[in-house]
Length: 191
Ligand SMILES: Cc1cc2nc3c(=O)[nH]c(=O)nc-3n(C[C@H](O)[C@H](O)[C@H](O)COP(=O)(O)O)c2cc1C
Image 1 (cartoon, rainbow, N blue to C red):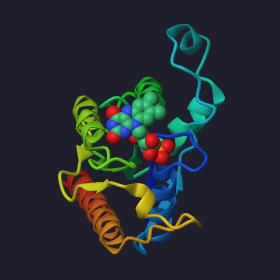
Image 2 (cartoon, rainbow, N blue to C red):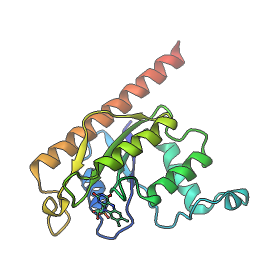
Image 3 (cartoon, helix red, strand yellow):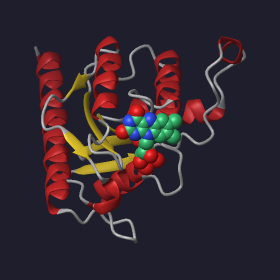
């Protein structure tokens, strides 16, 4: 059975580098993995009153995708030294729609930015959020696509060889971690 990875991007921008990175991940996915891409464009801002009336359709769709996922890839820009509100909002909704959407599941983090640091500070904030959600966030490899404008071609291909290799390693590690989690769960069931 292939490993199902849900890729969540932290930017809604049409030509977002992080969106390009996710599309590249889909092209570079390991043979035994399938990457599905979450659409956050119509997820409303979290509001308890809205939740009380029932989860909006875009949230239900996202929650169903998260439920099906064996692992996650989150690619995000850095906004004001942290994660964009769009991403935090999606995570907040997910944490309400399902008791533990990330619990025990491997999560790989990547960031792309035109800056020199490549979104590092956002990654460390994201890691903190994922601690509370009990995700199995990969410590290594770390993938920061700095000066992103120099690393993608005009057609959106990640052309930088080091960045491509970094993405390849991240996806291979994520898929292996998901296989390991699967094996541990089936051992526990058999015991
Ligand atoms: C509101 C806002 C805040 C930002 N803050 C930071 C920041 O703190 N650090 C940084 O490196 N880049 C910052 N940026 C730049 C973005 O990270 C950069 O434009 C990135 O490419 C956006 O990601 P995207 O290409 O996926 O849309 C900020 C951009 C915006 C719009």
